[in-house]
Amino acid sequence: MSKGQKGLQVSAGILQLILPGMPCPNGRQMALATGIHIMFTYGLALYGKPRAYTYKDLTRKYSDPQTEGTRLALLNPAFLPAYSRRLLTGGTLP
Image (cartoon, rainbow, N blue to C red):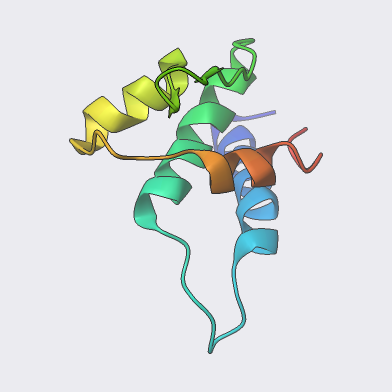
């Protein structure tokens, strides 16, 4: 399989993951941060990095490395991965 074919396969997998979360045309759009977090998490999974979400009841905050990485990359310390987590755990990630 060529690099181009592998890239298309990865893109198709990401789209299959994101599309179920896309609303109908008159609904609310998915946040850019959610889409970026899904792509980041999906990419890590391709390299054997497992998905794991750590929620701390004491601080009421997700504190796992993938969520923290998304927050840092987007300069958005308030990012919550709940919606992307729901999509990722829906079983659509190969």
